[in-house]
Length: 80
Image (cartoon, rainbow, N blue to C red; front, top):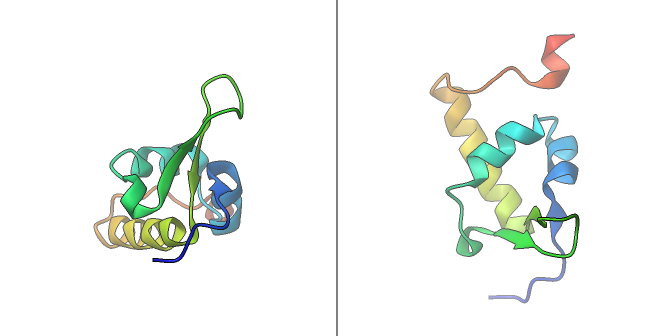
């Protein structure tokens, strides 16, 4: 496995994917470091959820599965 060279905060990933940050947080609760989901301390009082590139790819699959199952909220850009 290659070394992790960067992580992306959940707010950055939400903007990148055009998804609601709170929903992504809910989806990430069941993700583990092996899935590319990390908790980074030192950012804010309680830290922040962050993803590796593999984590973003895993999150995209979870989003796709949730949409297929009809369990996803509308994308923020779809509500205009």
